[in-house]
Image (tube, rainbow, N blue to C red; front, side, top):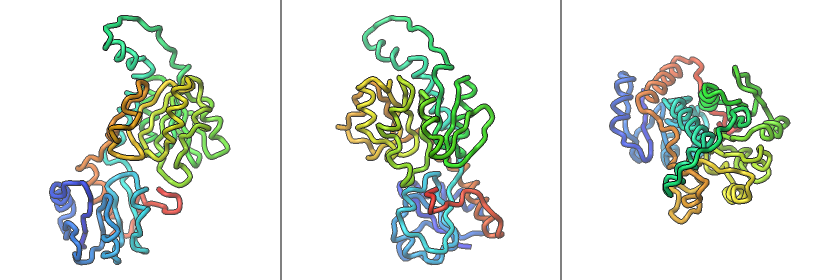
Length: 306
């Protein structure tokens, strides 16, 4: 079995060594133009040339959970696309979102600004029931985020394309329940896959439905957000602020207004990073199962976009 490793912006050697240990019977090599045909590929942001030169691939295993960039390319027609389901990212995402929610709920962002002016002022405690958190997207990451927020005793609501049931979470599904989901949420966390249907979903119309003083946390993809709409709703007072980890242009340009907006927190696409050892173990297990003809989780439906 031959496996080709083609991951842009990734130091290859630790990954290659990890896969060689996990799959000792396989021939695992870093892809170079003109390389021999492989049975499977481990990829992140590969060039189209890679797929053009690998027409016999059976499995393409993405080292990230998001596959929107991969679906813009043309993999071999017979290849099965597979994404990781966690890779150590779920707990990181839960940490990040819980921190953003608690930071705003406890007004620690306000205290940060007041410290700069040596201003000492007690703020009246808020009541959790008045700050329901809506989580858009209830996959592996969204479910872990929702569960994490329950530990802080926030009312948690979830919305997904198809119906789901999570203990302690008020679940909504489909277009017919989207309005009710938004209108009952004050925090809004976006963990949706990026598809033609979800691009621009964080727009003026939808964000205006949040309870007054709403707060937006986007940890999915920058293209989910209509940026000017967010700023207008914050400046107009309907939204209290936002924490943004993903952007339409990355790195975020120095002149972007998000950097200097006092009610927007910016982080550099770091809410959850792929953990190498966990990812290698998961992908290696899937390749072994694939070769045995067994079903595997994380197979991408190109029509749905995830």
